[in-house]
Picture 1: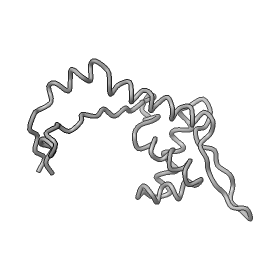
Picture 2 (picture 1 turned 60 degrees about the horizontal axis):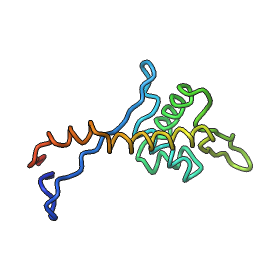
Picture 3 (picture 1 turned 180 degrees about the horizontal axis):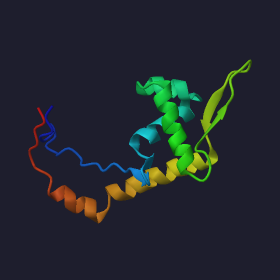
Length: 127
């Protein structure tokens, strides 16, 4: 894979990824954000996990960590049974997702990010 100048002559865009840590726990990061968005889209932790190519157990552990790190759960679940179970992103979860995306956007256009971008190699090869 080559990250050298693209066909239009532009360099690949430098992107920052944010990870929020609370003590030893990763409270939120790119993977957990994707999981939250897929839970919201599918209404199911297991369906979100399948879409991400991870086990249900792994997804559940990530949800448990997020729920433990915030003042109230980011993911709410309903028990299975005759009507079936399900999961959804809580109101707080939706607010956290929105704020996380705003933070990413601000970081991406920050002066510091622009300065770091100037130091990126002009011809990068990752073959």
